[in-house]
Image (cartoon, rainbow, N blue to C red; front, top):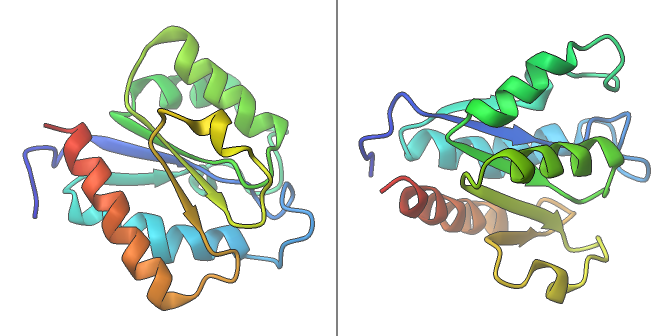
Length: 150
């Protein structure tokens, strides 16, 4: 299933445990490992996540580094499940400077109106992280990634 994107980076911006009030510790890391990272690897891309450089909030992180990552990644995946301002700000930066491929995720408990995502590539996943559903959704994500990298 690999395509010619083996050196392209796919950045995933997820809520941290710091952002995810109401979620169990490690919830979004589990989403990344079960749903997102397998699809990125199968697409032949280099997976990078916000967990690689942010663990307990944005304090102490070089914002220039984050902006560079947002701009240089071939594809960026944003998990909008908490609608946290750091994630929304990252999304605005990505969209403001370039119209590069972007994919949106949200869990089924997040109350983002479907009309707000109309025309955008997005996947809704079960907040309970059911492994069978996550595998199916990972294939859907893989399809989106492959189509964005043609």
